Length: 368
Image: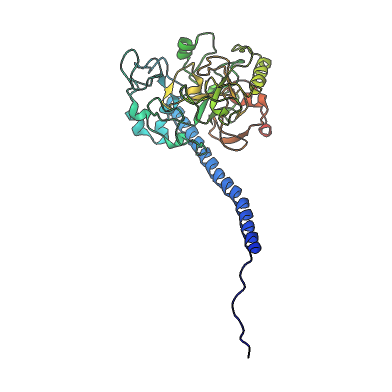
C-alpha cells in the first residue's frame, strides 16, 4: 500500500505578503480611532479643569463679592520690580490648594526677568517654592510639550488656562471678566484706557451664560526661546508684530477692529515672531502685559496673535486669541461655570460679543 504523506502545505510568499498587508491596513484603520479616543479623553479632562476653575471663581466671588483680578498691581507688588500676583493665586483655596496659598508671601511677589538674582533692590524672588510648583488643574492634557520651551527663568511653574480680559481693545479695553485692578490701570497703563476692576456679577449685564471667563492657550515662547515664522507649526505659540499701522485703543469703532483682525490673519508666512503669545509663570502678572495670564476676544480661536500695543508682551489692545491642540477649536468656561467648545470658524462679531460683559449684544445659542 502506498505511503500517504501527512506533511501540511506551507504559506507561499505571496500569501504571507497578503496577510501582512491586511494586518497593516487594519492597524492603519485602528490607529486614528485610538488617537481620537485618547484626544476625546484629554478634551474631557480639559473641560473638567475649566469647570474646576469656574467653580473656584464662584467660591471666591461668594466670599469677596467680586471676581479675582487679573493682577494686584500696585497692591501686593512687594519689592519685586513692580510685578504683582496673578489671578490663580486668589482661587487656590477653591482648587484644594490651601496649603500652597498659605505658603505664598504676598508681601514679596513675583518679578520680571531675573527670577532668582533679584532686581536693583537685591531682594530676589521670595516665593520660589510656590512659583516652581506645577498645579495639574492649570494644565491642559492636550498640550504636547512636556515642559515650557523657555525655562531660562529658573524653571517656573506654568499654565494653559487664561482669563478673559475682554473683546477687541481697539473698540473698548478691559471689557472682560478677568481684568487688572483699576488703580493698576491708572498707574501702569494710563488713565486714557478704559477702567479696570474689580468685576462683580452685577457688572455682567450681558448675562453670565453669554460672557466668557477663561479659555486655554498653548505654552508660549519667551524672549530666550527659539525664533520661528508665521508659517511655522509653532506659529500659535508666538506673538507677531502689528501688520500695517497699529490701531488705536478704545476707538469704539468695530470697523477698525475688523480691519486689524483681517490684517493679522493675512500676516505673511515669513514674518518672524516678536515675542510670546502667553506667559511663563502662573504666579506672575503686570497690568500692561496681557499675555502673562489673559487673552482677548479679538482674532478667532487658534488664529495668530498680533500686537498693536506693547509689542513685547501684548497689551489689552492686542489680538491674543486662545489656542489649543483640540481639533477645530478651544474650550471656553463661561461666567456661569458652564464650559462650551468654540469652533475656530466662529463669526468674529459673535466671538467679540462673548468676550464683553456689557456690550449689549444679542447672541443666539446657535451662532457658536
